[in-house]
Amino acid sequence: MDGVTVNALTNVSLGIKKGEFAALVGRSGSGKSTLMHIMGALDTPTKGEVFIEGKNISNLSESQLAKIRNQKVGFVFQQFNLLPKISAIHNVEIPLIYSGIANNQKRKKLAIAMLKKLGLGDRLKNHPNQLSGGQQQRVAIARALINKPSIVLADEPTGNLDTKTGKAIMQIFKDLHKEGNTIIMVTHEKALARQAERQIYLKDGKIV
Image (cartoon, rainbow, N blue to C red):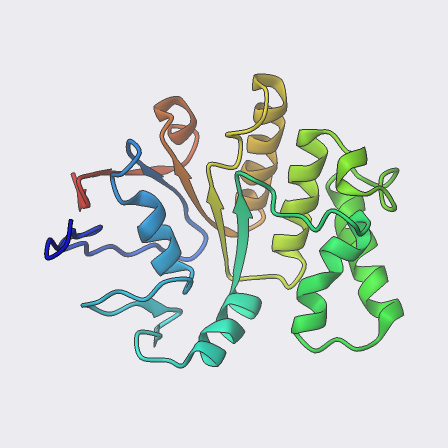
């Protein structure tokens, strides 16, 4: 309604340690996705400060934030967000282009290695519509990891997958965590959240 201010988040103070696997848990509208977007420099808060690796990003320009998103943060979304008209390899190459790697062969080599690591060595040239939901999510994870980000943010990463495929994707995140990656996962499923080492519950924009 006009003139009514709705606070997506209120008095949230939170720290995530390097190498931690944390789950942001709550019902739809609880503020968990807004919090993840702020953590990933996709959104900026109207009040307060955000730090990534000790650097205050609250007042940076959009171009500076874009650089942080490209170099420091890997995003995995429920909808995959793959470009439909290009192959798995080229989808994974995109962040490398934005990070300034001009050499086509180097980009291709890095993308192939990451896709093979995630079990897609036989699907390198397939377009998204030639892949199952689980395979598309693996491509999305490969794209998120290709620049070796400090933080991986996953928003309902198993939401569009069947139970068996969802378990396989969760295992990938567990393995990434064991390798030392910082994982922050948004979910409304408590059973899924319990697989993380820390659960942070949100309700009405507050940590409860």
